[in-house]
Amino acid sequence: MVENKVTGPASYFPSIEKKYGKPIEHWMKELKKVSKLAHMEQVAHLKENFEMGHGHANALVHVFRQKNGL
Image 1 (cartoon, rainbow, N blue to C red):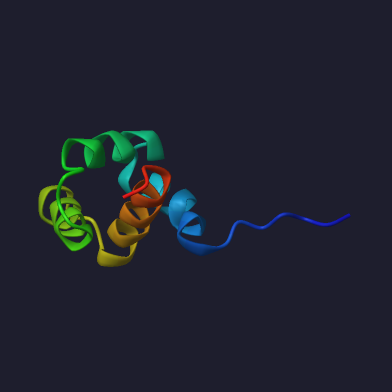
Image 2 (image 1 turned 90 degrees about the horizontal axis):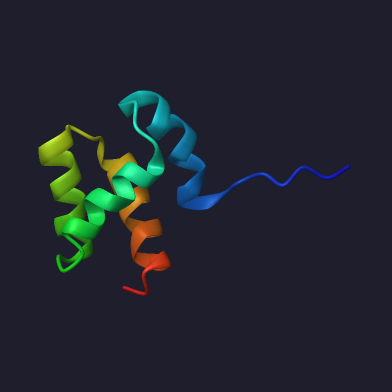
């Protein structure tokens, strides 16, 4: 039996949900509010407004931008 292990930025999602107490969908909605900003500006938004660590913020932004064709 082969286990499908999540890799890449999405592999951070379980720890993001645990650390910040909100589901990933919450963060995707937050990023939608600032979708016109550049990647690093979106990362800064999460870090400055929600005290999120750089790695977690970057992972969320990467997946958000990928899913939304940005």
